[in-house]
Amino acid sequence: MKALKGMALPLALLVLWQGWASVFGIHSDTLSAPVDIFAAFVTGLSDGTILEATRTTLTAAAGGLLLGAGLGTVTGFVFGLVPVISRLTRITVEVLRPVPAVAILPIAMLVFGFGYAMEMAIIAFACFFPVMLLTEGAIRQMTPRLMEVARVMRLTTLQRTSKIVLPAVLPRMFVALRLAAGIALIVSVTVEIAANPQGLGYRLMMAGQSLRPADMFATLFWIGAIGWTLNWCLIRTERRLFPFHTLRRNEE
Image (cartoon, rainbow, N blue to C red; front, side, top):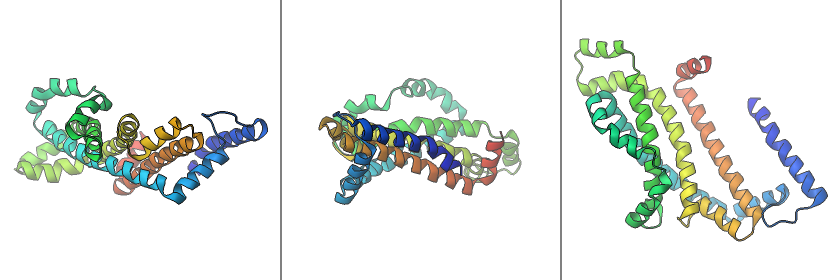
């Protein structure tokens, strides 16, 4: 029911857009009617071009997310469990963290050239810092009594991490994954628009440059639909895995 209410405004805008196009017509190289956009989308599906571009973009986004989130999680655990290392590297982290991911595009191109490797490296850089900081913060905010229990039980570092720390911070780590997944998709499309001749971003840019507004808007709306679907799936997964944590967060 909430999803239907949320769709009311976009659908109303589309109806008004189509009505305006039907009555007054559209005489522009940068705008197209919703019916024409839908037809362009169907054509892209039937000839496979939009599906191939989607596969390319999602492959790069998934690879960069896996690399960046994995390294960010490990680093966050190290920083959270060994505060002295966090203090020693804090200046380095704070200098690198504000750097936009796209700013390292020239370096990535020199090292990796065009293709998946370059795109994944930039995505990994973008995903690393949010996951690392959220993981470290989750460990720091653990109830001190849990660590006291670990000391009383004389658990080793590995046992303390696997039996005490990981179960306690796993729900917040999943929130970090949701954030990083959105970043991965955004950065992937941005890199493809800026430099990498593949995927949905490149298709979007070429449609705009070729004065094909129907294809351009079809690709744009498709990217939005992918992002919404990805977030919806992750939220549903979070609710199934951590129902009590999700309920408590909603109550707050």
